[in-house]
Each structure stands twice: as C-alpha cells, then as structure tokens.
Image (cartoon, rainbow, N blue to C red; front, side, top):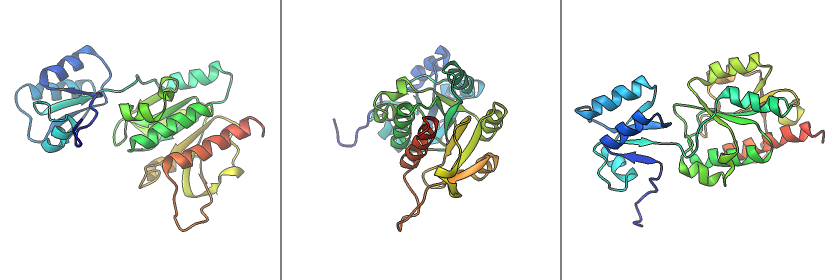
Length: 251
C-alpha cells in the first residue's frame, strides 16, 4: 500500500455508484462533493440527498482524491456506516427490557474516530444502553470507529439525531437526568447517577456546546491537579461511565 493511501472501505465512489446507493435506501453518513461540481448528474445526487435529509459536504478536490486513493471519483463519494444505527426509542426500550434505569452517553460533536470508538468500547463494557451522536459536525460509525471499538459497535446501540438539544428535552420527559461533563461542575463522585442518566461528553476542543449545556440538568467535573486543564474526551467519558456503574452496583 502506498504511504499516502487510505482505507476507503466506507466510501462509495463515482456518480452512478452513489446514485444507486441513494436509490437502495441503505444508510448513508454523508455525501462528499468536490467544490465546483454542481453540473450533470451531480444535480440529481444533491436533490436525492436533500429529499432524504442526507448531509452534503463540499470538499476540496485534492482532499477527495486522497480519500479515494486516487480512484476516479468523478467529483463525488458517499460515506456509508460500518454498522446500522438505532433510534433513541430503541435505546430506551432496551433499558426497559433489562429492567434498568436508562444509562445513555450523548456525544456532542465528537470529531475524532478514535475517541468515539473508545467511548463505544467503554460504554459496552460498563453496561450503557446506548450512545447518541448528532448528524452534523460529528464523526459517525466509520470503519476506524468500528476497529477502535474492538467489536463493541456490534453490541452497542448508537442513535444519530438531527438536534441534540431537542433530544435532551425528549429524554427529560422520559425521566432521564442529563449531566454535562465540564470543568465548572460539581465533583463527579457527589452526583447521584442511580436514576435514569445521560452523560454529555463534549467536543475535543470546545467541550459541551452552550445551548446543549443549558439544556442539561447539571454539570459534573473531574478534579484536575496538574498543569493540563482537560482530559481526552474518551478518558473523561470512561471515568464518568464507571462511576455510574459503580453506584448502580451499590459499591
């Protein structure tokens, strides 16, 4: 494999191939269109994406060349997920089937595949019922995420929603308490997580978004004793998830 080549198992490349993909009804993460390509069958692809509410991303042609490992992409490629998505209702139903208060992780614009994969792996290990991610400005269930999760993506329900803030409102109506992980909150170990719980883990750089944070019931934080003032998103998520599990085991 060339040094600058990439694994493109999650890409469908070329105009006809993308059209057939969109016609098939298969799940699509997003469609990548080279900047300036809006003529011919590209117009049909854009129309199909809008009709099916699929995210369209304009990308630099050189970047698309790199992503497609030099293949003839004709100005368009589509990302397909490595695993099918669930719904928020299916996550809640799963918790009910197990006779447990919901335990959910909400990823607010996590952009790094390694972070999401690690979060999925830890969530599955500590008994979370599901993970919620946004459709935009977030990594999806690509093949890197699947690999980093070490197979956990096959067992963890992941829902992708259009609006995280609205989803939080809906969860509250289902008696789920929503906690943002941020620096200015109450110490994580003083919070009662034994009822329905959703932990919000923020973007690697910006943290939890302002609107999302305002929707949360409370903010929880981890003590920072060193010179660095933040933890990796997946590390922070792991500590908080195991605190939830600890409390529910009565330890």
